[in-house]
Length: 153
Image 1 (cartoon, rainbow, N blue to C red):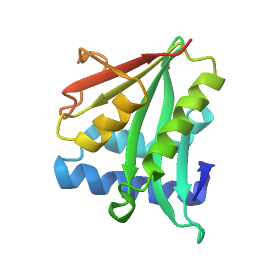
Image 2: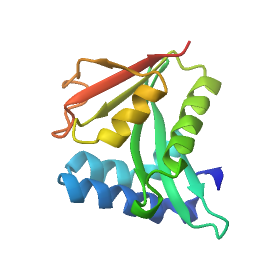
Image 3: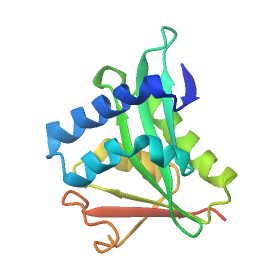
Image 4: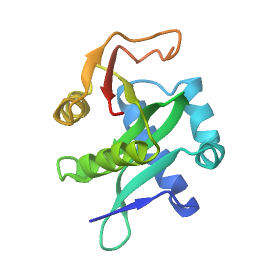
């Protein structure tokens, strides 16, 4: 397994992996479609997506991080293909996002999630994120019912 940053040929895999888990457990929201349509501009604005790929260059998992405020970064669109769940691929992408934010002088990393996503919640806590109230004005996602943050700078 190798961790690689976003490249245009991985865009479809990113959208497919995230659409699969979201539509299986929830519904695709307008904000999801907006984020998928704005991947390239987000990357140009300093966001990054990391992918775990296998030896055949097949994407296994992915995770995105973007700047949302002065020194504040958000981890979003964290997914693993079902067959790779539990392999460490997701955790490796997640860690790459944290490391990237730190390299960009992040002060805080935030995550808005859902209580049904027990595997993801386990990873957030494993990496030292602590639960905080959900800021619904800043993150008005229907499925967002739990939030986490980590002070990094």
